[in-house]
Length: 131
Length: 131
Length: 131
Length: 131
Image 1: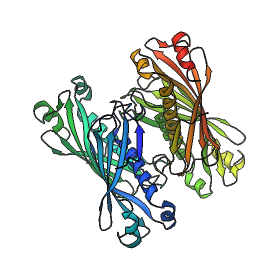
Image 2: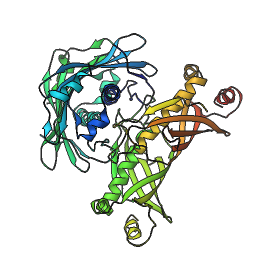
Image 3: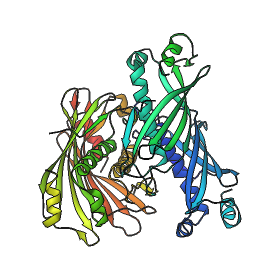
């Protein structure tokens, strides 16, 4: 598993309790999702076709508090392709201890103007690239 | 169900896609959790005893895109008291249509220096106030 | 001076140092700018004409650290109308002590597709409403 | 001038108007300030002595709108050492065109429990390292 994103945790990432705030984790995960998508898929071609990614569910476990000064490494991989949705598995690892700080299952659909598309044909072939 | 928090969605809440960003929803939900906790529990007394709330899981469904200019109303209620954890159910409703924009199950524990506490005695009595 | 916006400072607003973070102040000020603009100007009519507000300079003084639990009251007033720009003066007051937590001069221009517009005629009349 | 920080602009950095939001710029600048401080000064030693950096003024010019997909390069350099304060000059450059997206003068003081310290002796020697 190659880490795509590395983040040095700064004081402005943490909240009053000295830990990275819950909402900020989602930004870190989003950063790594875009890094993955961009490295595998021609997003401009998708946009030109009116296709957008829409996250419909995020299920995130906060496992270890992340302190200021730590470095986080992130991974995102394809977990499951459903009928009309895709699940990504994301992990955030503390570089110092290799412990998992947080992990998340992120479910998204691909939409055009007519709604969520079936995972078949060209769309499926593109999504398979995320493996 | 009384709405504790009302948020007018501004341009800076939305992202490039014109919708409220996934991470920002968590801030809105956090705002309403604190509003609830503060209205029911003496948080200063808790802090003095070294007790902290620690969110361990958030499971959020993004149901309807939220556009700039909309007003959101939020509710938080006690869903379940477990052995050492508590689940809150949070909803974010679009004022114009009364549709649910997003809902979330948020699991937290109460910790002191020795770890997560059992839901019994004084702690349980305090948590019951969240009903 | 009527306070348009009131903000209760939460743990997620503060950073590691226990104070509201520099960047977050700008969100609080932005909130109050929109509240003012919206209360005085028909922004939909402006958007239909292709007119946008563009901030070109912010000069912010951080005067008193703002702690979690404080309530902030914000004001925004017209400071100066220039040839092609407008300066707003914004203040953020701690409710408990009435001390100024921060103040800012915010310079913006009104743009259409041809660039920044002169402050004259209809545009000037609209901006005068911000007094 | 060495660029310390590079940021790829994502959809979640931009606001409804498709540009990086005013408040987010301050986070980008803060990222680069910490990168500089950390590369030149032993911040742990400072913290152990009870010394903190406190930003008292930010004066930021927004020069060019920054679109999603752009890469930004940041620089921070020492502009001026005052009696009890220091001014840093920060620039954010669009990699594609080398245009300045934004620049800022950031004034900070070094505080201990007795207030802002004079720029002399050890403190001054440390600050001189930022040149």
